[in-house]
Image (cartoon, rainbow, N blue to C red; front, top):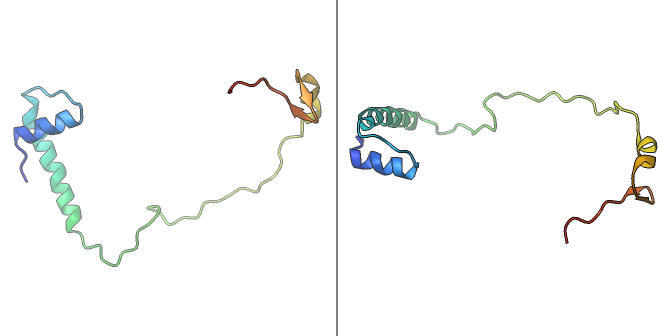
Length: 95
């Protein structure tokens, strides 16, 4: 499906791209190449093929959930400006 200058100008306006008149010829050939690739992809028989969530069927290795830092609560709470029942009190910022 060849694109004419009117189609290209409309696409450029929709994409908010400013095109100079001399750019229309090269843009037309680029669009025709893209549309040709899309037609090739549509011609591939895909009946019976299950969709994949990822291109590679791999399992993600997960590390063990282990504590790696010491609890610093007893060190930090005396430094807090205000505390109540073990909780930090902060000024209200949203009404």
